[in-house]
Length: 388
Image (cartoon, rainbow, N blue to C red; front, side, top):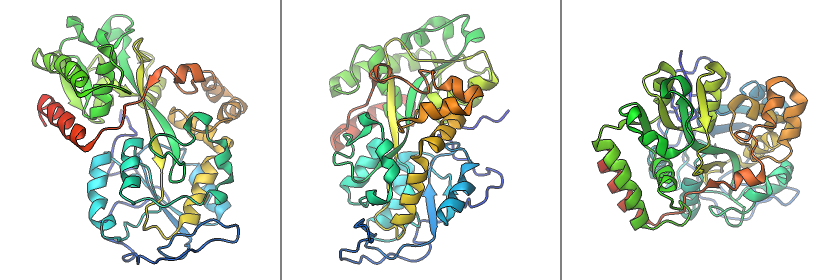
């Protein structure tokens, strides 16, 4: 069985109308001219200063992150052509691909990108993001109140969240011999060589900070080293089989590992196929990340991007995405629409993993922003442990 993951870059996804492979990001369609001036639509919303609105919307996003049946519906409703491009494998990797072009005001041939919140903050600080034409996104009123003007976008002008992603524990109940409750359960000697952790710094360090009784939202570098020491010892002792990217799902599905650090939607999808697979929200808490939509500064089709965002902020469409992916929706009112869908979708409306209450959301921790020096220090220590 091939298990698909939001964090996996698939070079062959099968045929999909409107999907393009990632070509060189050297300005397909021409370099953008850095036109200045104040252009607005008739309702006062800003138009990209880089050119006129077009009829094609190109979206760079993560794999397995949408109900693909909705894409032709969007095209018909909005009267646009959609290139939905699943070319996000890693935030830093994508950043490196587009940096040469955006640093020189050149087109990257994308109208929407979907970085994780901490990377979105970097895009905004570098001036790589346009302000969204919010007047053209009336369904943005459905944004969950807790995500309005978030820390990565304090004015709320540059991004709209696509989904919350929980970093949790996935495990095979048969292979671990019962149920787990804690992050620290993965350090039990009986699981030696049968656990994996993630190569994403914030995910693995975040969970191990929680396991050490430390807060990922307020930790110091000294705190991080306490958690790193635990990870390092587990690696040297052979407790950790590997640090993985997206292949943890393959290993968990095949029985190569008994438990792993994982992403909530991935485990949700796998558990539907294998009843022995369990999605655990650890007693110490979990890490909550947010992937967000933003319009690159060189996009010439901010209005088309707005149409895309508006469509998926309709609670009906948001519910269909949630029923397919199992990730936490940023759209208020989505749960009512899940119930209307009936069947398994209706059950998800009451699932704390997919539709957590405000109290349950409060149990998630968010990894705090890092300075450039902190990023370098933590990356350096983590890379040495992982062996990268």
